[in-house]
Image (cartoon, rainbow, N blue to C red; front, side, top):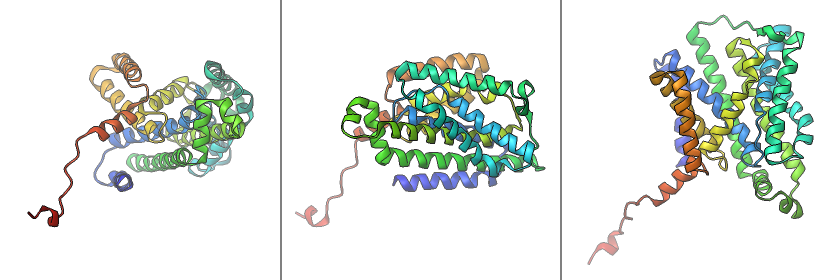
Length: 320
């Protein structure tokens, strides 16, 4: 049943750009796909393993700058080279992850945040990245609606790949191991769980997926700058979306991203950006305090408690 609903939803999203939809709905869905992908990617290490990372903006920015570099310097299409951005982000995570993952709790969160700020500072001073002036990229010579459709499908594909990867991790042996690490790392190690390997694998996968998203986003912007490609706000949003939706489920971050994006957009249109940020932040804080496990587990419990229709009585038993 769930697979049929998911397949129907994906089919509807694939058809949507061809049913007279304008650029605005496609742009809104595009950004929702992007945040959903980042939140699911973050959840692999932050939710399943319990290592709250605030440095995912670094992976996002590295993916964006890698694709920008190959377009500007080599003339290659970022649609084809975005996986290289994912690889660069994954390699960086592998190099930085081993010492960082030796820390836990708030220490890990603070170090990853500092790491993200450090990468931003380095990129801001490198001449080949455009330094403080940023980097301009040439977009394909398409009509605006054609370009919007192309980036819509590209980000939808990335979101689907990320969701499938998150699902495979959660339902596989890796997810069981990461859950054991999150509950009690010493106990997990004592019963033979390969703690270091699983944590490193989770961080590398999470970084690679985030870098892939950053590559597509950078090309869509056509101009990249460290101020928004390495923005700490992205890392905070990924954490909030995963916590809001439910970080112990692979689908929870997707639900959180959809809710956050729609509420944020609605408030921005109705009450303005500044007031929206205040209301949005207070609302999120209340939901996280009142629903610490996230929305998805709460909705699942409500569904199980809902009265079910009486089962049909066989005709033979119904006769007197």
